[in-house]
Image 1 (cartoon, one colour):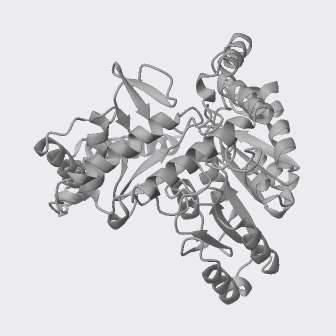
Image 2 (tube, rainbow, N blue to C red; image 1 turned 180 degrees about the horizontal axis):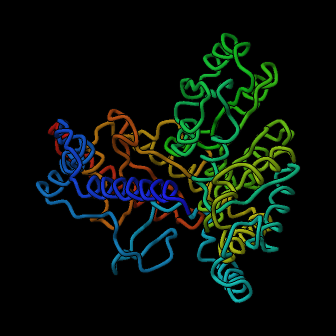
Amino acid sequence: MSVKSSLERLKMQIRRESSDSEEDNAAKKPPQSRGEVKASPAFYQFDKFPEYKEFTTMEWYLDKEKYPRTQFLKRLSVSDATVNLEGREMINYSTYNYLGLAGDARVKEAAKRAVDTFGTSTGSGRSITGEIELHRAFENEICEVLGTEDAVLSVGGYSTNTFAIGYLCRNKDLILYDELIHNSALAGCKMTAARRIGFPHNDYEALEALLAENRGKFERVLILVEGVYSMDGDIPDLPRLIDIKRRYKALLMVDEAHSFGIIGPNGLGVTDYFDFDPHDVDIYFGSLSKSFGTCGGYIAGPKPLIAMLKYFAPGVLLYGAAPTPANTAAGLEALRIMRAEPQRARRLVDNARYFVQRAKAAGLDTYNSHDSAVVPLMCRDSELALWLSMALFGQGICAYPMLHPIVPRDKSRLRFFINTFHTHQQLDYTIQCIVDNLRVAPKSKGVF
């Protein structure tokens, strides 16, 4: 090796060592501070969030009025027409186990058999090793009942509705939704880049005016309604909606969470109630946590729709575990019982009509509820709704208040879920307690 090349190698080594030393020194130096950013504590301290302040106001009010805490109580029985809360038997109007199937021996036995065969979990998503025969069996049977081409069963009702809507609409699309649509649908709307416009509840002239003005500006148009509205208990005019969606080439999606299993001569939902061609509704959503007495959600409709949701829609099947064997088996058995025993739904609707009739005769406001399990008792004042709920609780009646922000302040209410196993004696006792309590109700203090 020449002297020249040796010198060059030595220079290169010195440069490398010098560079390494500079990097080491730089690493040891503390990072330069950019100064402290100024921001209100309301933006980064949870106890300063306005939402938390609203919560603490409610807590303060409950303590001040010496109200018992009725939320998060330990339940010691099946939640049915009656329920045992921490050792106390109550008449129960706060469960959407409408048909009593959550405690039915056949449903429980089906769930146990599924656990014995498949275990407690599917262990993965359906597209890999999470698929079990019960999933397809449920989908086939719900299609047969609804008259649709296909269906997909997913793990939760709320998430199924949210993610299906979130997947279907894009930035060149329009979503028109009834202003009283469920929060899960609103969450789905917010996930999309679509234009979103609410129309006044059950106002079909307003809906048609929006379509006349906007249909030509967008590609897909999705109309969202419920089969039974979960706060008001009323039923939309589906034949009129179908006529509108046909003329404006829109897609119609119906949330059947509170309608399937209840309305219609056989209790099989909106198609049964109105007796129309099931293909006139493009998308059916259903929840297994209501009439089915278990947990899960499904979308039913044309085969192309279901194929897209199964393979491409995050949150429907992708990126999550499949519905558990127990929940799926329970839902399938519940569906078969609903089909075989339509008298359950008929008895429930008879109970609801009786309750509404007795309430109106007593001068109570049940708003727009008809032919459904959901009956609001309008108080139109948050403090009155809360006070009345607490008074009824003391008399062995479990009926929870719906307050702001769940509903507008001037539409605060108690919400009654009527059950197929409620007796007329229980319903009469409840109405009498409401009337007696309202006679001595305190004046609102305007706290919230």
